[in-house]
Amino acid sequence: MENRPTILVTNDDGIDAPGLRALVRALVSTQRYNVQVCAPDSEKSAVSHGITWLHPLTVKQVHIDGATAFAASGTPADCTSLGISKALFPSIADLVVSGINMGSNCGYHIIYSGTVAGAREAFFNDLPSVSISYDWVGGKSSVDDYTLAAEACLPIISAILAEIRNQAYPQKCFLNIDLPTDVANNKGYRLTKQGKSIFRMRWKQITSDMQGGKMLSTMTMEANSEASVETETSATLPDNLLFKREVKGAQIDEEVDTDYRYVKEGYITVTPLAALSRADSDSYAFFQNWLPSVAERASTSSL
Image 1 (cartoon, rainbow, N blue to C red):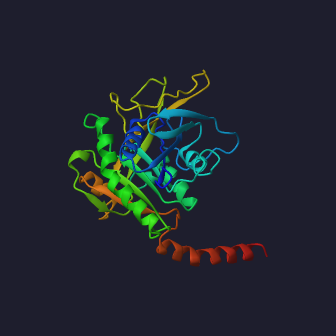
Image 2: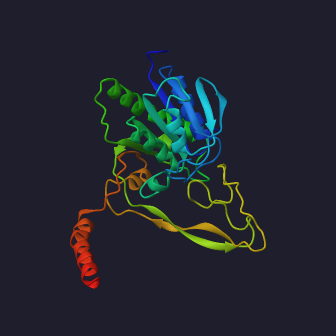
Image 3: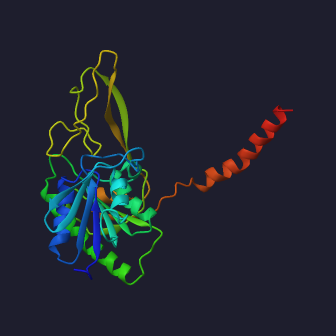
């Protein structure tokens, strides 16, 4: 057991989510890894890289066959941070895997994603990490697709750990993997870049928290689905106004070699990510000339 690599698993759909359970089963079934789990105790989709700061986390041990597992009251980033701290587990994992998320995480949605944040937090702490998402579509997808998605990712996970063991794995990035809806007939792995795709949202005023469709963690509106939905409700006191998000439409990236485009074409997309949010060179050049002129005008007006 001691010479086996250790993998820490987290997610944002919660410790009971079928995607996480399928991933853990697949890892355990190989009999090649020590599997740790530290995941949110409830749905934490689209919390981005939020962390808990003002109060302690509540943590409870959970039984998952073949793994040492804990459910925590925090965010995915909290769970990764706690899981690799040696405060919860006696050793630090060799690799952190976040997922499998219900719904793809491509383009600008990477910023919203708690799943990606779980991997990014490990990256912040100099640990190799991977986020995994499955492009769930209501009416087409089933929970069995998570098992296929997990099995499709095992060769990548094994190869990453081999590179880590050889001290050859790059430390300046982490990986984001998206699996297509028809994962059973996927077209293979495809190296991609983060694109600019995004679901545009609007707000609708409602009179009851039951009015309108449910927003799923896939950022789609589906009235009937096997997937879990948000259960939190807003207070309905007389003075309160209620507003609900609705999906207005999708903005698709026109660039080639981007994540959303290829996952929709049936590929398993593998996208190296980092954490900087630098603007493009044209924007930087504009402000290089603009900022001195602002300072000059401010100096002139103060005379």
